[in-house]
Image 1: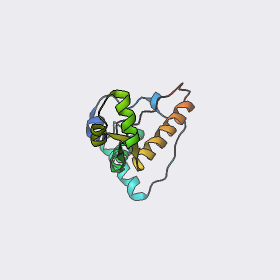
Image 2: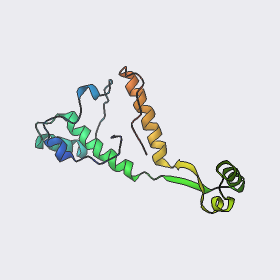
Image 3: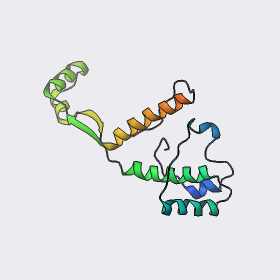
Image 4: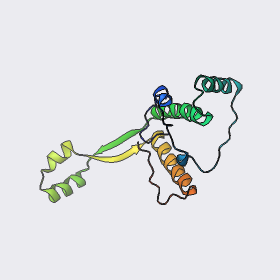
Length: 145
């Protein structure tokens, strides 16, 4: 998963001389998955089409593309609510504003909500966990909504 959630262009990445990752970027533990035959056949065909790419590079590229599409599909909302009368009076006193202007135009953010928010929180927690396994001190979660 890319921090910015953009779809990768696999052709451009696979045409590049440098691999899209360094071995030092890889997770410490190995993940093993069994694929249905129709998917394994398609992956094997891609490997034959790009013989200069490793199996890891092919699978990472396909996963990045699928993850980007999945992430884009996750909905979220950025909820706002109108300022209450008590809040408007406090703001008016604090900043010397007109209460009616504040009531007419001000909103309070309640933050972002939805499946994308939950996914990003979980992905960041897993990122930190995996980085700590690699002995990275104070990893910074990269994923944003």
